[in-house]
Length: 384
Image (cartoon, rainbow, N blue to C red; front, side, top):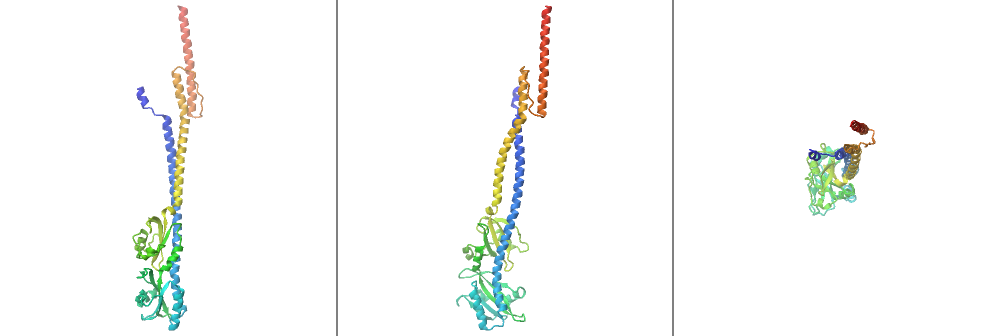
């Protein structure tokens, strides 16, 4: 039975050490987890807000670029009196505009009967331009409601550069439609604008049309390859969705250079393009990763502290009990002069006091018993 009892013995000190360590560790782990979660949520909102501001600013710059080209045509059409000017005056206005705006490759005026009145161009006479195939009646139908027209994107057969046709109406003094004033806009000059937009340290910004074709990007070779990005998650959302259902929050997905990024996009409306911004995930959540590392270091330090505290508390609790155990063993061997000092003002201290009282009573009883035995022996000797 003694051997079986020894095998089943479990140290109270060890049990208390484990218990204290687990309690402290679990509390710290829960607290650190909540702190990390709320820090992540807060940082995510900050990052989303910053990325939204960046993409809106980038979209405004691209929209301003296109709007500026329209305004140049409108200025000539309305202020220059294009509808009533003579052929020489018209040609002079067009030549002046073509010389001042390098993004225009060709400029043309057509009357409402689709007859070409005048065209000036940077191209040779042998070059074929999309400007020649534009139908005035179709453009006029758009201009009747929007006052501005922009054609679908196309790429030059020789240079592979992206081009669009923009047009504004030509009206007389009574506001009646007299023709179309159009220009072929080379979008390669928009690439310089994209170069100036900085997204963090390693971010990217680019422009796509509604088909997912890449229009502008810092890597010009990818634009010249007529690359289509409709397979990317963010571009697919733009291609398949609309401005009304556009998800405004930044999302984590694969980016244009095949890295994991935080990305969002902004519709331009007119034209129906989108500006997309991407920020590498590690850069976007750099602060969060720093918080995680600091939290891990803090947790490791806390676990070490929990071990020290658990050792201290378990020893403080079990030492008086161990002293009582040792004193009990001494008493069981007949050492009745074992008196313990009450070191704590708690139940264990009270137990120590009671134990000392018990030892004194036992010692008194033992002394009385020994005296009685000696007296009995002496009386027997006297009687004998």
